[in-house]
Length: 296
Image (spheres, rainbow, N blue to C red):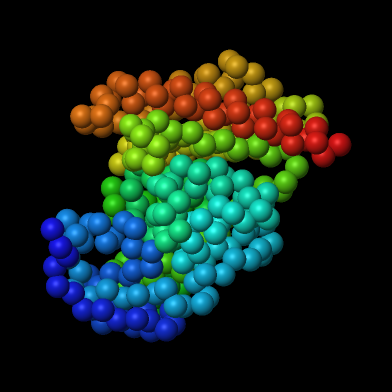
């Protein structure tokens, strides 16, 4: 199939994009990389009357650090972010997650903000945003607001963004570079396909090897990506021994509500959730200790 007819407008500034969204509302869609929107239009699952191209807005492609956050413009290309050595050291979860996103051809065009706005509950970047509790900046004509990652995703393919709002920035928390380890893993029919289940974890350990900070979550197991801050908080102070990690994984697997389809049953997805959380927490723990040893 081909996309239904639509009008096209290139925005030269965020203000211009927001004005167009305010004027056309639900009938308008922003486009940057187009790796999710264009296939949906081709299958006529999306039929916008107007496409607003934000690719040439320079401020949406920048990256910087402000205090305890790394700030990425919404139009930062996924492959560029993946290759950024400094960013990988400061926010290792980004590189870990992007390694599982599609293929290099899609990452070359796909954007950080586009993946978040698409809000696929199986997608890697929304999971990373929830686990790290990233802050998502939304602008519309006359105002700006910030939404926590855990509150941004409200249902499959639905976010807290209003129809006249443009996602402009994502603020990723910095944990420092010492004694921090992260891991991302998923199971899919083929690499690059949608994940049946994905898991992500990031931990920080002290000189004694005990956990000082932890975060983990699951994707593909619910209507939205899930982080487990309360369970992660229980790991703080522990040695992250096998029984500590298994207890967190078992509890997390009991809290999810996975669906089922031709790829996997709900029971199998719950099993995968338990296995993958155990795996990513264990790997993140080991990497944090190696990081600490290398720093000495």
